[in-house]
Image (cartoon, rainbow, N blue to C red; front, side, top):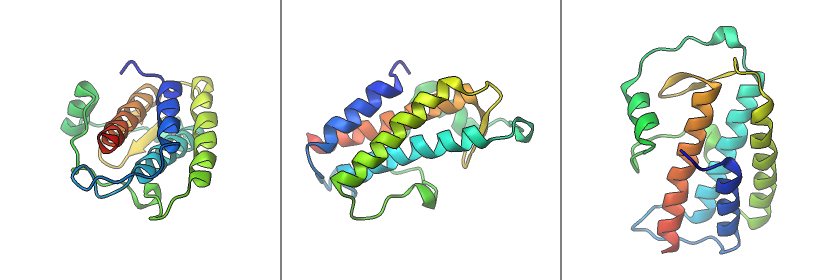
Length: 152
């Protein structure tokens, strides 16, 4: 995945200014929901990484992880996000701008984390720092594709 977090976050920001658009044939959620979810995931996972204990890391093989990490593709409508990453139904532009700043700060902190930091993904299991960063980019890319489709 060649995109940087800065590039992805800048693209998310560009869609904030277009307003909260809906296209029911693409998604039952609007663009603001997808933006908020993406930003919450970036901030939330970074926070987990910062506070992680490398001794908790116990990786195991996952076909789903192998497929998604190697294809950089998440099928639409198949995943179920943890409740704490699901935005409220009504999201304002102002709230998104706060989430945006938080995500920018969080992702800029990633480069300073020790390589032993880890994250336990609900489906993939344990990911090291490198794989977690890759997953975050794949996940953001997935939602950017949906937002692009909604915007036509």
